[in-house]
Each structure stands twice: as C-alpha cells, then as structure tokens.
Amino acid sequence: MEQKHLDQGIRLKKLLRALDINQVSFAKSVGMAQPNISKMMNGERQLSLDVLYRISDKYHVNLHWLLTGVGEMFLDEVQKRSSEVNEDASPYKTNRLEELEEGVEQIEKIIRQLKNNFSKNR
Image 1 (cartoon, one colour):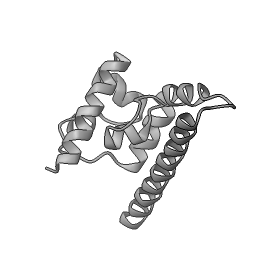
Image 2 (cartoon, one colour; image 1 turned 180 degrees about the horizontal axis):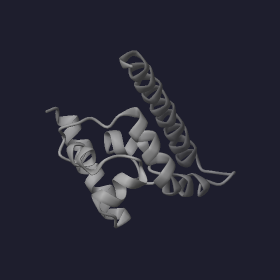
Image 3 (cartoon, rainbow, N blue to C red; image 1 turned 30 degrees about the vertical axis):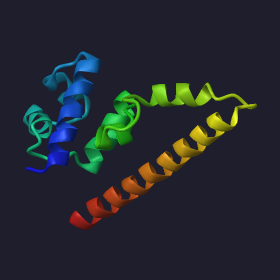
Image 4 (cartoon, rainbow, N blue to C red; image 1 turned 45 degrees about the horizontal axis):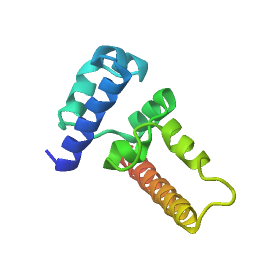
C-alpha cells in the first residue's frame, strides 16, 4: 500500500464527512459499488481518473486538493477566493494570483498525465 493512496483515502473520508453522506450514497452518486469506495478510503485502491472526474463533476471537488491535500476542498471556495482579488490588486495579491495560475497549470499537467496513463492501461 502506498502512502499517497492512504493520504488520498483520508481526504476522501474528509470529503464524505463534509458532504454529510455515507459510502453507499456516495458510491451510487458516482456510479460505483460501495466496496470499491471502501477500498479507496482504506488506501487499498487508487483513485482512477474516471472516478476523479465523476467526483469533481458531481460535487465540484478541487482535484488538486483530493490528490495532494493542497488548496481548498471545493472548487467554489477556490473561485470565491479568486474573485476576491480585485482589478487594482496590490503586488502581493498579484503574486498570489500568479502562484494560483501556476498551480492550476500543474494540476492540468497532472490530469493530462493521469489521462495518458489511463489510456495506456486500457
């Protein structure tokens, strides 16, 4: 069992608590069987690209947070913070926005890599 799978499982548990939903309901909502969700939560199984997309689409989860633990849990919170940066932002805020843009680019790169790996394994 890899540590990153355990860490992602812990974040998946946090997500279900935040959504106030049980494993059975969550599994149904993303089109999976509950035992598979349980295995992911226990770190026995990796979150697949397909599952990540389903979770993100259904619950607007920040995939970067789910994969790495960095950032906000939900995309709405990320967008809310981004919208708080106004047009005449201070240099600090401008630098923060640039950091966020770089983070988004890294997330997109990770997703492309996951997609390529997923395609190769089919």
